[in-house]
Image (cartoon, rainbow, N blue to C red; front, side):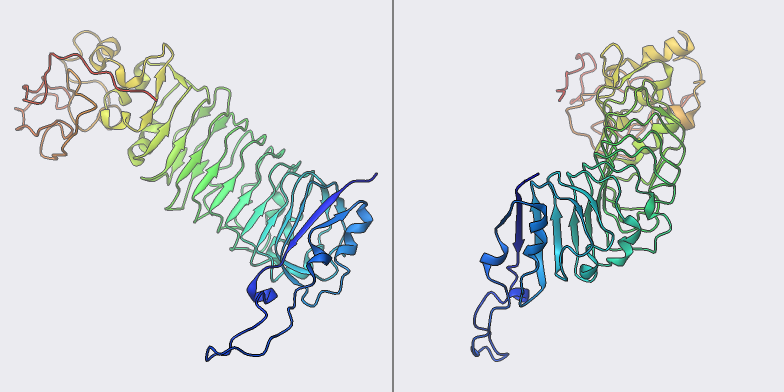
Length: 423
């Protein structure tokens, strides 16, 4: 069957191709002209081949310099790429994209072991890839295998370490599980994309070897449960953790998160879980400062969310945490919830909630402050979030339950709570 293969080989580097006909001596003076080591452009780019058998002929040309910068094959139907297809030519970047590669001989790029830095084989029909040979390419920093038909990447297990790989994209494949040690041989990964697969579970400490991880995407899988240790990280620079669109009804165990830091953006949107347990989300909400998304997870707003209702500081991190009746968690009446959970005299009696888990480190306030106003942090005040700082209140039998503070010029306790914009 005939088809059209478009091959573009870019060899425009000054270092490799000598794009200037004159070169300079160390003193800056022009020397004699030298021959351009690049082959004629007519021989390599662009090239149109109408049969698969014609493609190797492109590389049979007598190139003065076989070390090329880049090879791009797009919109093709190449099928299998044999071992000797490139006839000794080497590349720094190889892009085989567009749906045509079904298999690749393990030794097809052996001549590029010391030169290859980027390998893009995305948007093809690969069912297998020789990941066990990745350590033979010590300079590869980007490997894109997205949108193929891979069933596993466990060939990385036991491979000698390859610490150069920083971008590893395996999204839109058919992965259902990951070996617990799959990333130990590639600890330098900074961007890892596992989204749009069929993962149903993770393993404890799976991502812990990735000490430089900055971006991890796990959205659009079928994760049903995340257990203790599944999202533990050793990296100090994690910037994005994307867990959207898993489930349905994603279940959580205690101590799922560790290593999620101050600048980490965590997105849990549309996982359809309904419980917000302190043992799962309390510690991580205290660590993050930027964004922790709960969009489209409609929560059962009973006493299980009281720990969040009581802590206005944590509410600012829980973006769009919403009850099943479409009420935002930060709009719930904390006093009413305490009375419903512990009886009408709960505000007059010592609290029966464990302070270490369910109550913040500052007393209740009623009514609520304007979330739009600015706050001054005053650690000596009973409530460090109140503006302006006020003198300490008299001792109270229950330090977590106090009467409302006296009004200040910037705070009107009779004014209705303002409506904050939702995005």
